[in-house]
Amino acid sequence: MAGLVQGAHQEPRSLQSRRLFPRAEPTEGICGASSSRVSGIFFGDFTTGGGYYSKIPLAIQGNINAPGYIVNTGQTVYCSNPNSISAYGLIVGGTLQQSSNMTVYGTALVAGGGDLELIHEESPGCIVSSTLGTGEIDFNQLKNDRISANQAFAEMPPTLVVNQDNTVTRVRAPINGEYEVFQFSTCHENACDNIFPNQMSYAKDILQNPRYFDGFKGFTPDPDMVYVFNMPVRDGDFLVVDTSIPARGIDPCKVIYNPYPVDSNNALKSDGSFQFLRDTNDVMGGYTLAPLGDIVDAYVGGFGGDVVGKSYRWDMNDQGAEFLDYSDAGGNCDVFKACNKDITISGSATQDSTDSTLPGTFTDRSYRAVNTGTDSTLSGTLTNQTPSKNSEFSTVTDDPSSSSPGSGEAQSSCSITETIIGSAKAKTVTGHAKTVTVVLTDGPSTFTVSHKVVTVVPSTATISSTKLSTIITTRIISSDSTVTIDVTET
Picture 1 (cartoon, helix red, strand yellow):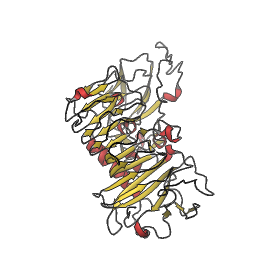
Picture 2 (cartoon, rainbow, N blue to C red; picture 1 turned 90 degrees about the vertical axis):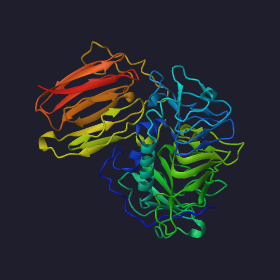
Picture 3 (tube, rainbow, N blue to C red; picture 1 turned 135 degrees about the vertical axis):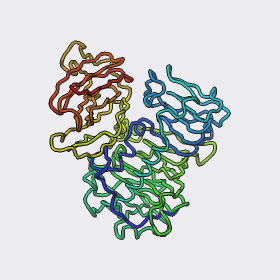
Picture 4 (spheres, rainbow, N blue to C red; picture 1 turned 60 degrees about the vertical axis):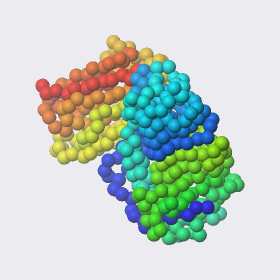
């Protein structure tokens, strides 16, 4: 078994800056639009030996060699705009290196080219292309975000300790009221026990037990918490997880497996690397966040949920496992549940990005506080409720002539309310359904707001204005519809 060691403890980095995820910074790096939509992300090469499939879309920064592989069998794609997040099935930054066919549901972009005739596109309207680069996927940004999230989780001190008899002891309150953290002692000869003396969790049964883990003793997981399994790995070493179901008893939609490299002094090593071997007999359900780890997959079981790694290959050249989703691990979610939260924004803020893309995903945004005086303060709520898989809006019967927003709405769970705060500039938002509030932090004291809805079937809108705010409610039914909001001085 490999050694794992982590570094000198540091208190979590400031959680007050740049946070879309509620009350904590780390998950901002894993809950963006591209994050939630593309569930398998690898920053190196992706290599399989032949056959098998992935239920989830894949984004691969390196090369791909996956003969006979089938990509994205489980997620609905929207091909009306084939070069969009909602259409993607496979994104490759490198080249297609195989000599036999593969099948993709959704758009396949292969920036480095190759024999693209080997990719069979199964979704009408979607495309296979080598001329569009990686489209809306920015691998450098994805990598930076995931490494930052990986390290921020690693810095969290343990809140719970798993003892040798699998009972659980609390050592501190949940981090930010949101995260329960286990720091596992998975190093050779207990070499990393000094990271948090007397607070390291026993890993033998939960992570490194080829037999059967029957769950925690005398402990009932809190469904409102996110459970972080921190697993430090010595730089250049490897970690094997071979317990049948490591997080048995915890909702896989609320579990983060967080392996990360450390140096010989147990210090977090931001440029380190390691190998992560999954050898579970059953589905390993949860969000596996290993952006610095080369993932090696055994031929039994499989990952069930999001997977982020440095690279991916099979342990045996001719036998592998499928990428499954959270439901295959017993979860009741289409995307990681911790990405479906209500966020309350208090005070003044300016939106760093004015462009957001839906449907069904948390959007990439960040807010920064600005000092504009008491007249422009705001308390608002941003709510993301992801539509269930395969849900469509054909049952929504809004009357275009109605002055009341959302009349006849049949699927309120598909509604997304977004608070946009900014100066008197144009804002563009895209998605299924939106309520947009524009609040001026500078500019004129009186203003008008005009709106334009493109390819919307159907829509209603109401406009009301006050001295410092204007609210526009627009029902957007088409997945690629655009609402442009222009704020002008009057």
